[in-house]
Image (cartoon, rainbow, N blue to C red):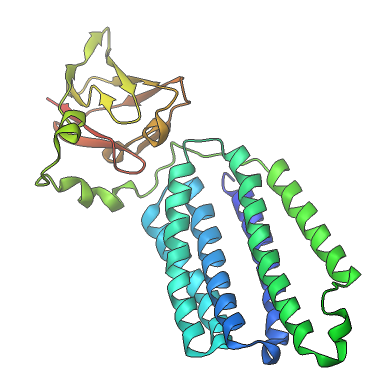
Length: 310
């Protein structure tokens, strides 16, 4: 199961969020409006962020990632925002979709890079945010309890032990789990194709140069045709490939060290999604059985090209 590690780490994240949620809910009567607003915003943002990010990395489906992340963000943000009154509800309502949007963008942009490095760092950031909100609630409760003002700056050994175990366990899990991407999976890549059809934008000169057509025909080699495609941070070269119908096509992809998100190249009509290592090479194979013009693009839909089959 290629998504197993993402499901495991997500369940662990949710378990921590739920534990803190229970703690906050039990102390809800001691939480003032300002802390309630902060709780709603934090829970909404964190829940939306982790959901969308961990959905996007293995699937690459921005649309569903944003939708699911926003729903989960609202699920956590709005109820806990109520602790801060009507303003807290607004905080949770805004934070949920914002977390979903940012998580979707983060997950999509990070796909061409080292997920094995990203996940421990992402886990570390998650822990900082969730421990921070738990600490803020704890301080508020202790400061409100007049009978315990003398220990308001102290944290119990049980709390320290709990968070120490959580931090060690989550960071360890983020390191030992294998986070991979099946770049050849047939995901719903056509969801954002409508954005590619807007050809009426007037671009400034430097962008016109980047989008200038670089046309090249494939070379027939025995029973297949072949072409080399260079990937930089701003352009595919060639960005217009002319190929022949009914002859298997091999495209050799060469990525520059700084090619960024352009290293993930997607041919939606052929269910091809390939990530090329920085400074490395990959080859994709396409069977062009129909004549026509077919778009290809990077994961963020910023670097584009087209395959013309005759």
